[in-house]
Image 1 (tube, rainbow, N blue to C red):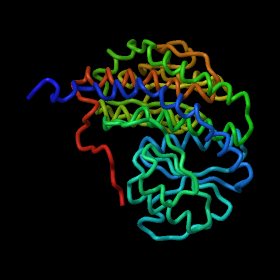
Image 2 (image 1 turned 90 degrees about the vertical axis):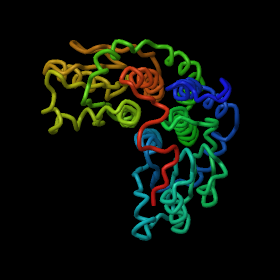
Image 3 (image 1 turned 120 degrees about the vertical axis):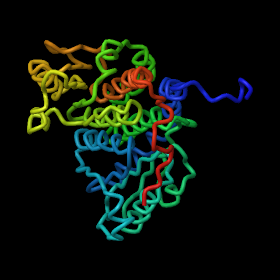
Image 4 (image 1 turned 120 degrees about the horizontal axis):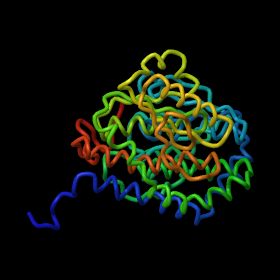
Length: 346
């Protein structure tokens, strides 16, 4: 086999693609789609929002819930795709904004959910990295994520592009000029976040077996995404929790030998996340905290940013750690066992 035809080195695709995430956001910001969609949704005045997604995209949908409810004041909930694809049940979605988030737009259950939502009277907005995918046929509006080709099984830049798209759409819908300005600066911050050194977490996590990833509010979706990536790429059993929920039972596992990674942003939730980090450290768990500081925790570098932008930056820094950790644990993050790039769930 020639050198040109050889397979990429383990992790090369994930590393390269994650580092490119800022480019997708720059492309989004260069167009007028944000302003147009914002005006259209504002005129629609939806009574509620339903999100529909799987995998990493579903963690972007969690981000969307907090973003929409806190910035636009509209109730937002996750729609289970199986309600349409398996149970064939009809839901009442008149005057509802139905947001589909998908890298491929090809999973049959997501397509069925979009079709059912359209039939039920919803305004269907599809955030897609493949704009001409099957979901697009049932969308009133398609927003291209512009992440480009993503070959690694572990999606990275498409997740960050989804967050950027959601921020852009909601900031124009709610006419939040401060957030629009913050988003315009985000591509440069994303490049800087990729270069931050989180290696202090690498050696302790190399032999870890169990981990909590914790966030709260607008940062909860980032925690969910990080936990998923650790399972996918490192074979590390990781669970995501809200900083509020973790005290309702899960804290019982905090002890020496346990690990907790916490994401904080500088808003009303930040102090609570830092307090939980202190609790974990006090109980002997190896604790890593990004976005704030806490006694006893390994404090990971972060950038000062608008609290809505912060989760995107923390995930960008985390992706580099996840890549390095997978290699340290003897795994190829581009080719996780038992997984495919496109999962076709019925």
